[in-house]
Image (cartoon, rainbow, N blue to C red):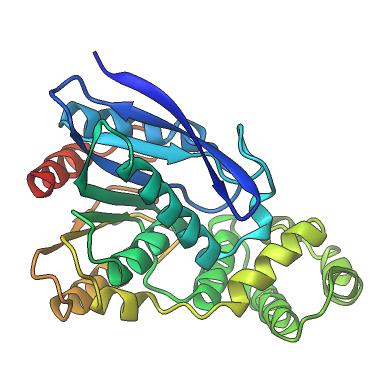
Length: 307
């Protein structure tokens, strides 16, 4: 039977809480440290991580994931931290699991979904000691491009016409410029959000509900982030996986750009895969089940590298 161990670690005045899931096989174990996507999320990513975690454990790989700040048992507020801080939190989590007696400190890898995949790209380009890295549904777009893509396609899915989409993109661009210029929430609420809130398309526009949300947006936009450049610098075995029906990012473009960038990477052990009927969560949108082959690929690919 598998075993679950509760762990805590301190990071810049925060206490972050997580769970280490250990396989039943002989110890020490390889481990995958898991990173959630955007927004508030506990260590289980609202239940999404459960089947992925079980797949790793069944293949002899322990997993560790922690509650984002202000979620679950972790202190703080997740909106206070951009991608760089999230990456630094992951580094502290890697150090934590390496020190655990049940873990093989020479066989530590990372898994990230969506925004968590951005973290995987970053860390795989910076850290020499990773046994493997898996980026699932990770954008190759920069943050500003991804926000605009997200906005446009959310409105398309909700059936808005091109004029509404153009107006929404104009608002998104104005908000990005305001973030770069350091404008506060009161200003953008008065000048941009309140007038736009009367438009019929506004309910489909990504929500900015208060100063905390705005602070998070400004952090993401202000940080330099180059996913393709990170992929070119990957130093460990790397797997990039996309769902062909993903509407939150351009999956086929992402697979193509990932593949080209990884061909130039320092690591020669790189794989890009697309599951044609998978959505952003690598699930069948009709059944909400993971597409056939996805979990098996994660478990077997990681186990081969962990050995």
